[in-house]
Each structure stands twice: as structure tokens, then as C-alpha cells.
Image (cartoon, rainbow, N blue to C red; front, side, top):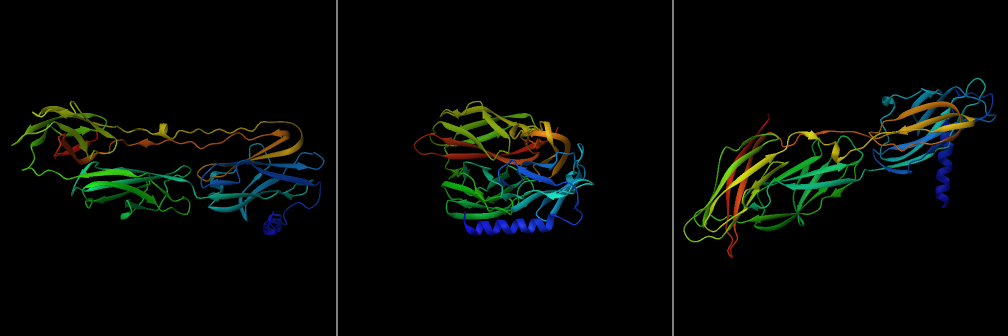
Length: 397
């Protein structure tokens, strides 16, 4: 081990001895010993669960009373009596920031036992790993059309969502920068994409608690629209484009030939709101044209716990002779501390796995007005693209 590391460790221990052995500790009586063990990895991501325990014992095996204090460096996180029901409130601490922390447990002593401090256990907290998902409001799009790109940043251990900014790129060209909202989503609209294929990415810049990351490339296609006078066919949509969230609406699409000949026409939709879909009765109409049904379905609000389900459990098995005080230290997600004191004769002890739990409601397709396009693309040698715009009104029940 390098000498530098040894020196730093010695300095840290000396500092802890000075800070965490206050004059209030009992100075006469039977000697005691505190051993603090952190069972999770020494390096964790911001917001992750930390578990461990402190064992307080008397040199003669006698039972103890008094209090135990937990410290993060020089900060007293919690002081509780050594009893089976003692527990710190959630407000005892705000959690570990990114950086290196030294955790200790200090026993106060009682009328017959000396006070003592545990070993210092280092915990290194690094920025949480993030993921970026990217979506387009219209793909394929038509030249001159405004396309909105939405990037959603998620960090596994953080609630609420990470903060910061997202840079949107078209290959190596920067399209612009947008800030994340409270839901962790940033959006950028542009009508400047030229005809052809574009590789769009979203780059999250990171924050003090969340690491930088990038989305997978999104292949955005922009087509030249055929002018109405030159198009060999027309596309029209009839019906009432209004729907209640969670329901479907049925419209009719008609493709009719104009002057000249036309090839079979493939139908598609773009610009749909999130959590909605369109389905054509016949996806490709023949060269003679025709009509087909268009069903637009929306999603009602629903429980999204299925996407990130977790459960919470904790257990401490113990039995046997000899030690006099097991303190269970729990540092759960959301950076809250819970400390529980267990007064018992202990020989074997353990910590069960811990995890956070939570659920949420996905609002489904949001109410509002959305301009969608029903696109007809001829499948012949010379492609023609014709789009019919429809304003879809999504309303609450």
C-alpha cells in the first residue's frame, strides 16, 4: 500500500478520535468496544441503499445501557438509547452527498461501563448512473414541418428526477439545448431538418448527483412532400377526431387518383400524442384508390409500478450468548437514515437485503389538441408523399 494512503488513514483516525470521544463519555468502569460494519459496497451511487450494523460489547460480557450516536464525519446523524425499540426519525439526516464519508458509531457509556468509539468505515458516494431515452413527435416528417424531440433522463436511485440540461445533436451538428423539467424531460422543436436521414442523439450534461449520459441514436427521416398540384393522388380524412382518454376513435381515410396514373399507396401516421397508436383497416390501398378505416387508440391513466417495481424488507436474525447490544444501521433510498437499537445477548447477527419501494400513476395520453398527419406514400419507382393534417382532440371522461 502506498505510504500516502497510510498517512491519510492515520490522520483520519486521529481526527475521529479527537472529534468523537467527547468529554461526556463515561471515563470510569468496565471497558467497552464498538465495532461498526457496513455490509454494502464501500463505493455506491447517489441514492443507493447502505446497510450495516454496530455491535457494542463489554469486556466482561455484562449488559449495557446508555446511548449510541451515529456520525457522518463530524455530523451527528442520530443519538438513540440502547433499547430494543429505539429508532431515529426520518428527519434525523438528509443523506450522503456525493463524495467520501467516514461513518462511526459512538457508545456513551453508563454507570458501570466506559464510553467508546467504533472503527471509521469509509463510504464513497459517486454520481448516480443515468439513462436517456429519446422520442420524436413525427417520424417520418416532411420538409418544413416542426418536429419535437423529447429526451427523458432517469437515475435509478433518485426521486425526484435529475436536474440539468440536455444537448440535442443531429450527427455532429448541435440543434440546441433544453433544460429538464420536474419529470426529467427536456424537449426541443425544430423545423430546420433537411430532406434525408438524420441521426439524432440527446446528451445529458450531468449534475452534482447524476452522471452524464447519452441516448441511443434515433433515425429521423425527412421526406419532401409532393405539392398538391403535382401529386397523382389525394388523401382525405373524414369523421370527428375527438376521443376520451382511454378510448378509441374511428375515422375514414380516402385515397383518390388525380390526373395521371398512380401506384399503390401505403398509409401511415405521424405526430401522435404519447401513449397512443393508429391502426389502418388496410395499410396499403391499390392503384385505383379507395377507402379504409383509421382507428386511433389512447391510453387511460394507469399504475406504472409495473415498470419499476420493488419491495422493502429488512430482518435481523440473532441468538446466543456473550455480546450486549446490537445496533442496526439502515441508510435507505431517498437518503434517509433509520437507526434501530436492539438490546440483547447476541452471538450471531445478520442483515437482510434492503430495497426501496414506490409506485406512481402514469397519466396515459394527456388531454389536449394534437395535429397529426395521415401520410400516403406511393410505392412506385417515383415516390410521391401526400399528407392530410387532422387535429385530434383528446379530452377527459
